[in-house]
Length: 481
Ligand code: NAD
Image (cartoon, helix red, strand yellow):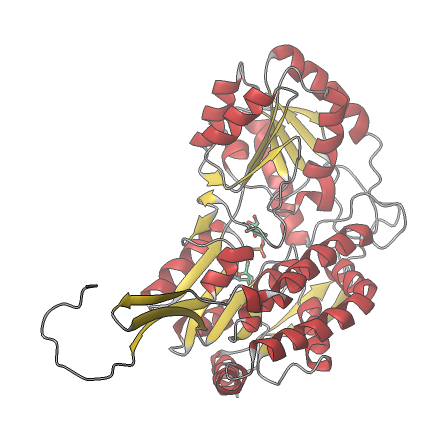
């Protein structure tokens, strides 16, 4: 018998191995899909209200255990407890949205479209759906997917990141405690083999993915070739434009959280600040420098910590190599966090870095770093700032800080990005709106959660009916008379 693959799960704040996670092989995934298909037959036949009520009970249990979920996130991801609680909150908001879904599953009805003919449309579930999620939001991104998916009557197989998989298992436990039937929600651990098994299984109808762009593109191509419905959200390089009329202290304060919160490991983190005009740039750099000096870096579980460690040594090495590269490329490293060491001497810690004079042709501008590294790319006017952003291959989020309504409106209208913030640094839409980027930040057509989520996890059926008094054969195209 070949040995099952195992990989270590770390506590990034100490560097210690917490346990080994066993990766599902193809046979294990296939068994999960078959179980899911069986559960679908029963679950999809339940009333919409029954499904909502299971979710209501699940929400109650999750609410009572918010701290346990947050602690699990912090232990394996490293983000601060307060940040993890925020993640749980944003995730549970999707469960709240899903509970009200019977209203959104109502179809349309037209009476008498022909003589004695009515037409109505219904939204029906797809069947077995799969969700593959990244390490940086171990709870929230699963919550973006499965509550809407299963309330619509589907079943869901969640493949969380192998880097921090315990949160998904905890959430599954609460779902089962809430009376969620076996097989409706399942978690399979693993990496590429498990994902490929899901992508190729003929019973899997739809795949939701969130992660890096190369994998998102691969998932989209592979799963669409297999005839599946796919939404695959990828990486990001989010810009924040600071106009000369903006309150610089306020903009710098917003940038601190947006660039360095969660150690920059957020798909909506701001990684490029674009001050408009030389004077704005000088003021911004000095406002940032004085704040970076005071940021409290440490164990995310300790009170008062503002920034935790990076998720792994491998990721830390990647972030460090980008900072080294930026120096080689000629960008000005105004704050160098490479030497940061915590008091314990342990863990995957990396200090905040700030680059000035970053040029669009540099790799540190073009590529996603996904760490506490903020680049400043100066622009002479708003037109140049918009051009810069529109030329960038990623299109997830963007922000503008200004007191000028007309400028903000023009910016929002012209910028080719999926989510725009006006004086809001991280414009993550609420659960009842939808989340998604443009360009190489999303492969597929449909964003996540909100109405887009309902559409993704259902298919429309139109039913035309007539209850005639007499039957007569019709050989011509039916038209309304
Ligand atoms: P990742 O792409 O390495 O992994 C994501 C998932 O895909 C994991 O479950 C992983 O096991 C699986 N996977 C990895 N390599 C694979 C392969 N070759 N074949 C099949 N499956 C594979 O991403 P990550 O490092 O976990 O997360 C960070 C990335 O996610 C960043 O690029 C970030 O921008 C992105 N992200 C995007 C959004 C968004 O909404 N657009 C949100 C969060 C994170």
